[in-house]
Image (cartoon, rainbow, N blue to C red; front, side):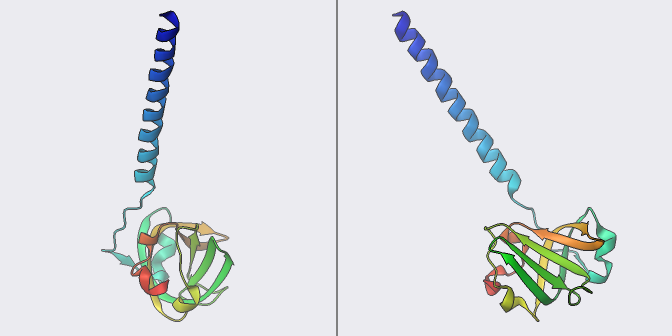
Length: 136
C-alpha cells in the first residue's frame, strides 16, 4: 500500500510538471508574436528620431546582403554605406527573396535601434513585412 501511494505521488507530481511546462510554452509562443500596426508610417528620413519605438517604415530596397540563411540585411533610402535604414531580417522563420525586393518599395514593422551609428529595424516574424508573399 505504501509503495502504491508513493507511485501515485510521483505520477501526480509528474503530470503537474508537464501541465505547467505546457502552459509556459503556450505563454512564450503568444508573447513572441509581434503586434503589427501599419496605421502610421514613418519616413526613412525621420526614422533615426524613433529609436526605441516600434514603427512602420516603407521605402525602396536599394540593395541587400544575404549573410546566411537566417540573416539578410536590406538597405532602405540609399545604397550601403549611405542607407537611411538597415532592415535586419533574422531567423529561419522569415523567408524572403531579397533579389526580388531590390529596387522595389517594401514596408517593414519593428523597433528602431542604432547599430554602428545607423538606424536599424530588426524583423523576426513574417508579419513584420507587409505583403510578404510577393517577396518569397
